[in-house]
Image (cartoon, one colour):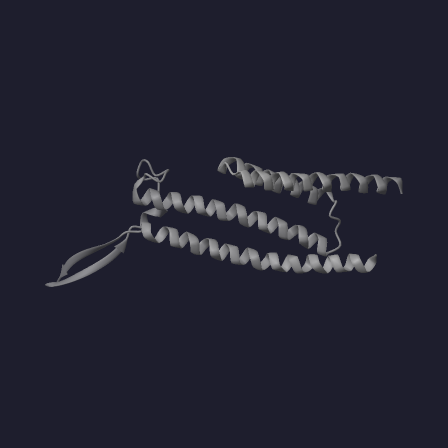
Length: 176
């Protein structure tokens, strides 16, 4: 029995490190995707200035006004023009990258607890599974995604199983 537990702990440790690499790759991929989305929205302009009788071209980009995005009215959606478009794309993509990174980090943390001998039926892990199910459910509802609803329902069933195991473990601990 102890060998099986050690093997499970080692597997959870491997999954923990795989999740660590996955989080780093996901963040890098997400930021490169964001850069790819923003680049076509950035306009460039040339200004020709005559300095001492010589014409010099200065190239500048429209990305600079992002630091103060609320100067213009209507910078809240994709119809807001180039600056609003960039602000909208950045905010939506960064929010999505942040939420998914947070979920991956939480799953990684669960495997870290399991690799150190923690119980999968602890209240912390069960609550985390319920939190994951809630995020998946809201995401599926907002996206009107049936497959996402199905996945959220499967995670919900898994949460019920974990919660039932937690209750059984607490009962066993109190009777001992």
